[in-house]
Amino acid sequence: MRIVYLDSVAIEVTRQCNLSCAHCLRGNAQRCSISKEMITAFLEPLDGATIHDFVFTGGEPLLKPELIRHTLNEFKRFDITVDRFCLITNGLMYSAKILSLLMDIYVSASGDDCDDKFYFAVSTDDFHKNEFNFKQWGTYEENSLRFEALNFYREHSIKSPLAEGRAETFGDKPLIEEQHTFGGRVTVDEDNEIRLEDELCYVNAKGKVVCGCNWSYKTQDRIAVCDASKLTEHFEELLAKEKEEERKANKAGLKTLTDQVV
Image (cartoon, rainbow, N blue to C red; front, top):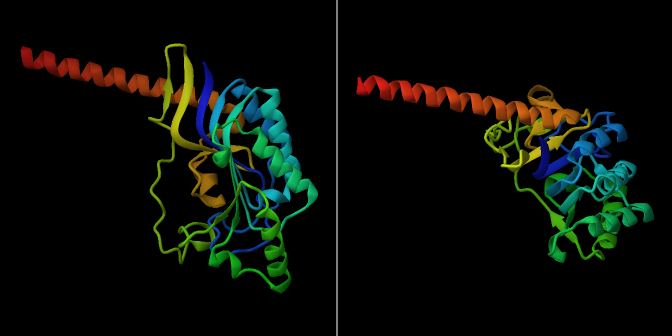
């Protein structure tokens, strides 16, 4: 079997951050970034596949532009098609190198809608702004003006934090009861090709795969489903388990019907 389609994928480029926002759902920053080797190990089995949405996240993802660049290069090497990208930054990072990278992300997207190929945003919520000191505030405003020149620039804000990470004790929304596994969302077609529909596959900086993205680093350690390099095998195990459960259910249903006839 081979994976041919993933609806949504996120790579946690780094757990490092240059802020310590009280509302951060990830928790305290960590000196941990995904390796180039792990990015390659995750993408190589997806050779020729299509990813509808791809997110670069963190931490602050623009602290590690070389890892984002490596990911783009591997998309080309493995002929992976990405319809659209997403990257949200805190606005404190800007350079000619970063600007060039953002432009390359945009042109790498294969989507037909030019206005929807790259959701690049600077956080504008009040929780975020409250963390700036005077110098950072000036940098943020200056960089925001620079980014506004990009036709794919967006503003991004949240109204209330999720009760995870640093906001665990004061988030005014309960922890979202998301499913921790991909069960039921993985399908295989007549050509024995695997597809993941309507779910986000999150690859964290430790090289582990998590179902969904609204989790702190602590929660991720608890609910990770497999190593990033083993996603195909994990999907095959899920499909085999579902097939066996279906067989048992059909057998039980047939037995019940037989008993009723007798």
